[in-house]
Image (tube, rainbow, N blue to C red):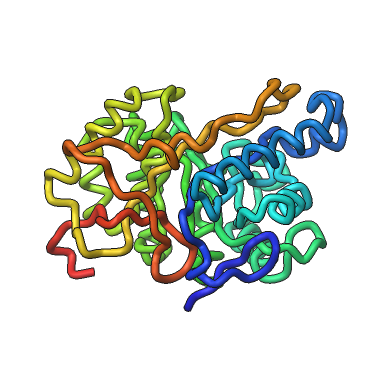
Length: 319
């Protein structure tokens, strides 16, 4: 079986189990925890809250989460490792850069930045020896900026060198995923190793089907009861149903789209009294096409895009 880097070491893909592919245990900004710890309130309490939430998720069937918190989102790699030990939930950490591209990288080359990502994958993050298992990149409503393009190209080169997959943040209403795919294509990256995130922030089936025809994976990863942009959860389920009805389904396959609930993490503020309910999807799989969808098995190789008994690919793609 293939293996993936987890925060506690190499993980056989057979052990991924029920996987949530776009999550954040806690987010902030680079350096904020170290400089202004009071903004987090009682960190011990935050730790207990996060542990309780992950334990609840595990009791609901979740075995693995992919934490897409990068350096600029306040990644705390030792915190993630501690939580994985406490809760028994596998956690896969990310290298890469989100939307807050550090000024120090603005005028660096794709090759220079790719080397940083490769180091975090092959040697470890911040001298801890804890290795990243996925590359995260992000482009929002403004599209792919000059600095953003450098990060995308760096990610593609790091992915080609290491075999690690890429997960993207996009602004689907502006079809930003198309811009990302064009750059990945130009870099010669195998698009089967790319996950275009937040794709269900739109109901534009022309856009979504176009991405699928390119060969990428769709991240339907904001499938929650309230979303920051785009349709409500019912609209998101209807979009999924429309893709199924359009023939983007192979009932016998074990690889598929990702359906999860980005945005339920504790933020940089004193945590609320009770645990954040990240098990919504574990308890309530999306209802689409008039049926309760099966929900999840790990992919057969590499880092696990969540599987659910069918895949969002054209029947004729031959994959």
